[in-house]
Image (cartoon, rainbow, N blue to C red; front, side, top):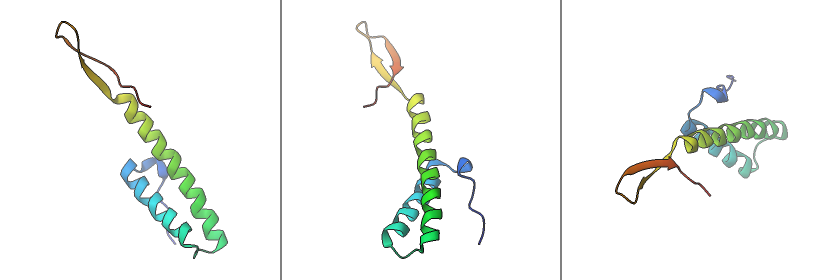
Length: 80
């Protein structure tokens, strides 16, 4: 069995795709206990990585606004 790719080197999309596969495997109930624990651990790492990538993207997004005098400015976007 090959070693899994380092989570930090994955893009958001790659990490999310792998996480979806892990969820499907765990939900199937067909994996042995030791394998389930290993993939759950990997899934937790992938989840944290995805959350960090989303937070970084959120900080980069700016909201463009039109001021009262018609001037275009930007401010940090607000996310709920």
